[in-house]
Length: 234
Image 1 (cartoon, rainbow, N blue to C red):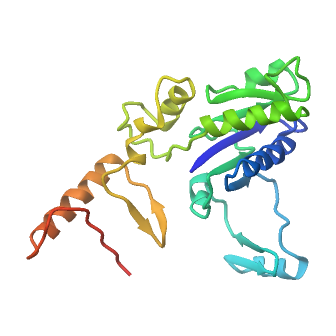
Image 2: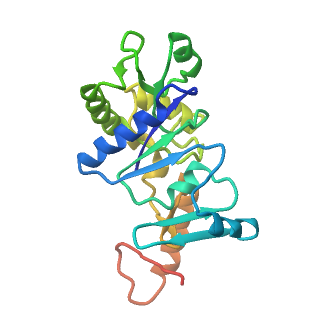
C-alpha cells in the first residue's frame, strides 16, 4: 500500500489539496484512503457519541455508510491495518518519517522549516513560491501522477537490515532516487505473518528465525515435500 503525506501550517491548502488529489486518484481507477491528523473528532451522531465515554469501540451503521471510532491514539502503522487501498493520503503528520510528503506553503520560509528530505514537491495558491498551484487543475493532475508514482510506506521498524540507521534515512534515499523500496528487507520478508487477516511486520532477523524454526519442524513430519508452507492458527 502506498502512502503520500500532505503537510503544512494552517490555512495553506492541505485539505483542499487532499480532496483534489483523492478525486484524481479515484478518477485514475485507484482505491483511495485518507488519514487526517485532527485536534478532535466529530464523526458520530450526538446520541451514538455518548457511548464513547465507556466503550473502547463505537460503530454506527446506516444504509449508506459505516462509521467506527476507536478509543485511544493510534499510530499511522496501526491505522493502516484497517485500510484496503491502493494509496492513502495522510494529512498533517509532520513528524512521520516513513513516507514521502507534499509541502503546502505560504512562503519560502515555511518550506525551509518543514523540509526534512522527504518532500516530493511544494504546493500553494501562489505559483511564484511553489512547484505547483493548488488552484490549477492541470497542476493537480500532474501532482497526482507524480505522487502516485513516488508514494511508498516503510514499516517503521528501524531494524537497520537495509544498511541504514533507521527507516527515515532509507526513506530519504528513496525520495532522492538513490535507493528503492526493494531495499527494505522487512517489506519482502521470507515469512509473512497475519493476525486476524492483518499483516504483522517482522524485521529480517525475526522473519528468518521463524522460517528456520518452522521449516525444521515441518520437514521432520512424515510425507513432507519441499515447497511453500502455510500454517493457520484459529
